[in-house]
Length: 75
Ligand code: FES
Image (tube, rainbow, N blue to C red; front, top):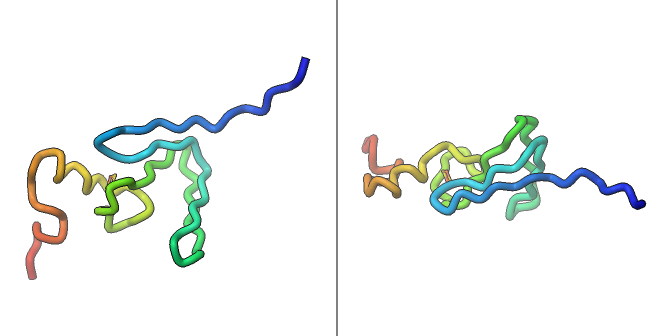
């Protein structure tokens, strides 16, 4: 019987981030690699995070109909 390699588990929140069992490395558009060693890593799918590629919960503003993060603290 073949031995199965443990699968990496990914959970998709349709209103928020993708949750991936860490550690995780993400190759960004410019070729840089972002790494997180957390047990579960929240990867931003809305592109509103100021900590992109990591979710910083900015997607919640859109869910509640509030202003985007850049409009909350105008300078
Ligand atoms: S998914 Fe959470 S900030 Fe983008």
